[in-house]
Length: 277
Ligand SMILES: O=P(O)(O)OC[C@H]1O[C@@H](O)[C@H](O)[C@@H](O)[C@@H]1O
Image (cartoon, rainbow, N blue to C red; front, side, top):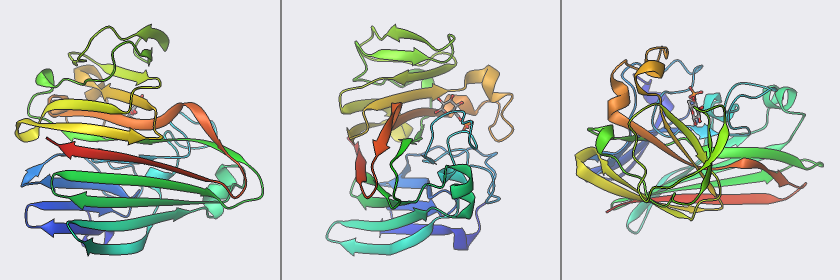
């Protein structure tokens, strides 16, 4: 369990609430009309050191194994600050979180200076997530970023993902070779770890918890990662139950296939909207 003072709650009403842990600004719960939409492992570790296994961790400034630092970068294991506390505005509640460079990140990542703002907006049957990276230094830098979304489902075998047909993807399960997706609807029946490159900006993920479908609309996040560790990988993950692969699917919106370059003083804005339909 997370300590109460680590968690910021955005409360629209009793049945529409999301929770953000300041460790990584990780969204750990999204209750939509009373149904939990996000998966968090029963084995997740809340020690403010390890990345939280589930919810929506933020990958930045590097997706995947990183020669300069930890896998998926430092954002998901850094303490964020609450820049703007939850406030109601009409039919939504929003809050903004901030990660700034510090001694540790500068040492790890070539002395780069940045502000990363993350705004979470909960509405009726909708969650909007905005990333805003600002280069505060005198030199340009490159980064990749991704919202590592773990959706909750009652049965992963029934989940389908649209919007990926005809796309090239890198299949990390098959020596990172490139393939072309042939299916209108992607289903997951085994260990899957794919990076779909340059996808259309809309994907529908079906049969999530409570038989809900979610439409994911992306702006400035052209790539989609689909990941499920399945049985064999689940067994070797200490913070993931052996059978939990049946209850989750990661569909992750990112800018990851190639790095994004940001010149001194420039800004990168991107967003994801999740609509429950
Ligand atoms: O165990 P981690 O570091 O949270 O990563 C989980 C997975 O995250 C996915 O996004 C990657 O494509 C996988 O390769 C990786 O295994």
